[in-house]
Image (cartoon, rainbow, N blue to C red; front, side, top):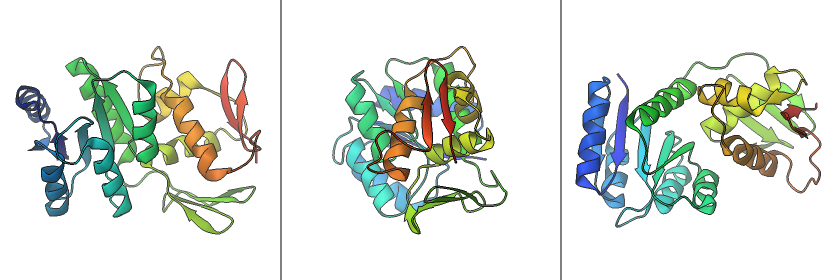
Length: 226
């Protein structure tokens, strides 16, 4: 049974989220502010954190940073009432794995939670190490190094990288990546893929412009050139 932490200061929304998640069979803890969330994540292990960015005490951005700096890689699904692109990008850069913009439908949120949990459960993927350029990818440990130095990848960033590796140099459409990595239907389009690709390039190909390995295929998607 997956354990989820909901970090939300709106008591009505928090109650509704908890109720719907528990109906789906999840064990749910609720924290009303950032300080309470830090205490919860210290005392318990969670499989997923649903996090409102605009919470009192320690805001969502600082909470994500604190978790990642202490080595906590629990997947984070961000809730934001503000539709500004920079908020979403900032959250993803700090280590969030996905986001939902308020107002949202319960079915959409549940689908994203299910997909994120499915993609971040242990035991995937497995196989030999893969090398391209100065990058070495270890699928068993879900790690990557650049010139021998460890690179911190979020669970979703690693899944996206491994999806490109698995295509063996072929172009992969954004729609296919959404299905393969996020688990959404193929008719769902999002800039989430582009944002995660930009982060992979920043971490794996720093200073390379244009990139040599994670290549944009115009009007299609992306491919990995070894």
